[in-house]
Amino acid sequence: MIRVEELTKYYDDFCAVDHISLNIQKGEILGILGPNGAGKTTTLRMLTGYFPPTSGTIRVKDCFMETDALKIKNMMGYLPESAPLYPSMLVFDYLDYVAAIRNLQGNARSARLKTLAELCGLDQIMHRPIGELSKGLKQRVGLAHAMMSDPEILVLDEPTSGLDPNQIAEIREIIRRIGKEKTVILSTHILSEAEATCDRIMILHRGKIVADGGTDAIRQSLGGGRRLNLKLIGADAGEVEKRLGTIAGISRIRSTGGDMLGIQVECEPGADPRSEIYGKIKETDWILMEFVLETQTLESIFRELTKEN
Amino acid sequence: MRQTLHIFTKEFKDYFVSPIAYIVISIFLLVVGWFFFAAFFLHNQASLRNFFALLPMIFAFVMPAVTMRLFAEEIHAGSYEILLTLPVSLTNVILGKFLAASAFAAAMLVPTLAYPLTISWMGSLDWGPAVGGYIGAVLLGAAFSAIGLFASSLTRNQIVAFIIGVLICFGLTMIDKMLFFVPRLLVGPIGYLGADFHFQNIARGIIDSRDILYFLSIIFLSLYAAWLTMREKE
Image 1 (tube, one colour):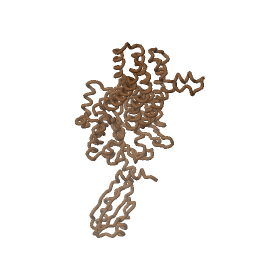
Image 2 (spheres, chains in turn blue, yellow):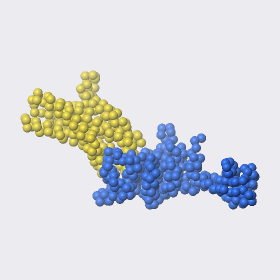
Image 3 (cartoon, one colour):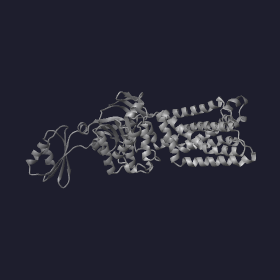
């Protein structure tokens, strides 16, 4: 659907996006993650044709951005960060204007406006100036704007930033619903959001892709081994290390102390020594209070990947 | 073409939903009316000459105020990003905004039609110069709109856009009155640059293709400069 090759953008001497190549399938919800200044917005702006890349090509279906920008813009709906809409216009006037530019006429236009008002929950605010709306409502107007022509590709830049938890849930719900039939690309720096809404995640750092794939795939390829947390009563740290140290697949054992003796076991990638560990403990008279498998969160992977060194 | 029309409609409506239009039009009418009628009865002539004599000067201040927001506000608010990612080209945007500002200039002139009407009732008005003057005024308004649009594309600050616009428009209005400073050789070419000079030619009732061409070239050059500036911003 969308094919990006060697996309690069320099602002004067500063390299914001550095040779990014990526392929987006139809019907995918792609989340672009990254710390502030990683190049997320710049990438989206190039994808939507707001400014041209310094080098590299963007192809949507059979159209190249350089030559067929208008055709591509016709296929796309874009919601920039914090939805900068004309504050003095009424919601209805604004959406009507966008519909006109999107070439919707007569009955089709009013029908579309009605559908969108319903989908984004705008019925009550159609005749209020955009400048008076709260951030969440404005964001919803922005979503309606982006979906006006029922585009095949929807690009959303930080769609939930600055919203309260209820509004975030609503927007996510809308994105999920749209994502069933459309290709959605969204950027965010909130990990749980990407995890909750996206099929595929791409992590950007300093203009480069540092991870790309499904949430599980990223966890597996970059997360390293599993980590087990144990809590024991009646055991002694040295004894535990000696007993468990003989099991294959364990890379490190660390005691964390506490009232009950806390033990952290790190495993080698791919290894699952849980049954052996349980067997060893059963041989003693220690009481096992806790035995937890900790899957490495996306958060820790993200921090690992985007660490400033 | 259709996109240009949509942008034109939106921009033109924008003037009238916000207070800008009403404030600018009232100030314009007040100033023009005062200066024109203060001396009108002293001259005791049924002509619009004095009205057209001061029109370029007033337009040089009013038109940049009308156009200052066109690009500066969009860039400042970020809505320009939305506009450019809609299926419209930069040419559509510039033409739409320019036509809206020019149409506003024309709308501003409509109430002043009361002057020729009242004057023709008081004495015998020569309609040739009056019609010529109005044609010239619309051209002048369009030219100053284009200049103001260019000024607005240079900055994200509306006040700076206004000042740049006034400087250029005022300069073009006054340039043919400053000719005693320049060497004789340059008097002709520099005088030719004066907007007022060409406007007064038309306002005399003589519609010369050279004067029309002058205004059209100002419009074209300013719009092209605005186009280049916006392209450069990308």
